Length: 165
Image 1: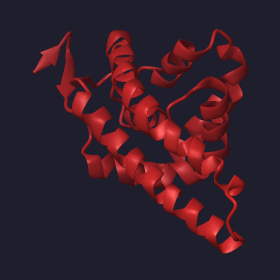
Image 2: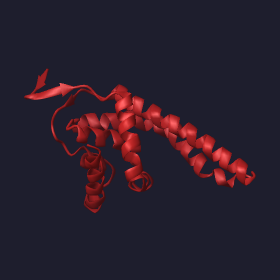
Image 3: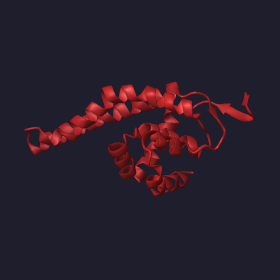
Image 4: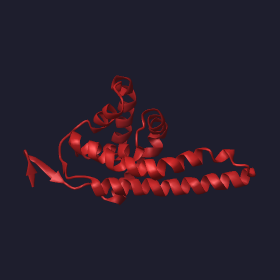
């Protein structure tokens, strides 16, 4: 099928996205966590957009907005509260060993929610076009008016993506 001369294709499989995420995330974890905490970036959506850019696949701006909205409700209801709880687990009046066990249990549950978020993204991902598009720039522009200050970190993120190819 063609769309203005561009090939339409489907989203990656769950396994492709998860393996890509496992390879990329350790290289860019500090940046991802900074953007998550300061801009409200959803790391799973960010990782999907990284994958799509690497594969030279693209979404339209309305499709990106729709994916963001689809994920936001689930994340707000489940992932974010669990993450907040994990981050406060050190406040529990438990022994150090029990605190570590609690934190590890919550971290494992959070990881399962992250996998679910990726599955939700892929379930709602529309057909993709084979076009180079600055999806990461578009996503950051949804979250902040000051995208200029993120140009160097964005360049670094793209360098990490390129190293996976």
